[in-house]
Length: 277
Image (cartoon, rainbow, N blue to C red):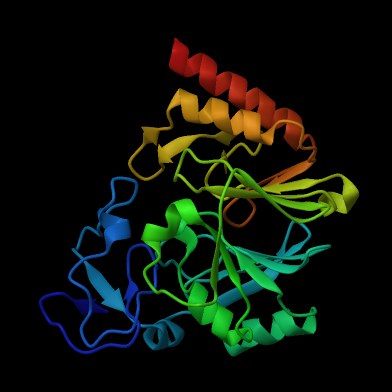
């Protein structure tokens, strides 16, 4: 890793705290805007940087099933511990979310399953090495909500921004702008998921809690800042009418399997009652 006090040339620096890859630069940036935002934090040792090559030397990827879906995540502890999921939908094969490290083994595992047609990411904390992944997968498009355009740290012509509160990718696949955590925080609804009973992939907009029977609504998870009630109510309206039996959370095993629609509704009620008390 590289300390700001010992600045040396580097290619596409990666923030050690949030795992976001930045544009190629002769020197590491002075700051990470994502970590300096009140929803995140700068590491306790100060701003530090690494590179994708160094990540490949230090870490490995976990490639395995997570409640019936093929998942990709860093095996060791680094940055935010999200995992990506491969979704074989009627809108093509979608890589939902990204991680900071790309390996040949992961790319081959995806190709053996039929490849990836597009990458879709819920919000800026999970942008990570999205351009690196796109290039490794043959230049597939990266789909992001335009409300979060300012948080992109490595621009690319592979990035496609969408607008509005929903985007239908196919009859059974819809992106929903949940907002709340970030303005463009996005959930993916896959009607064909969970063996045709419907699945919701909300990133951090709705975070599956440790009991795996509820979801939480936070503006900042690490800094314990609750989401505004109005934002939660708008989210509820945008998700109304969607059927789903499962909710796949942001990391391994953090899923609600069965009865997820009811669990989400109970969680909306519980949260809004708590903040109104």
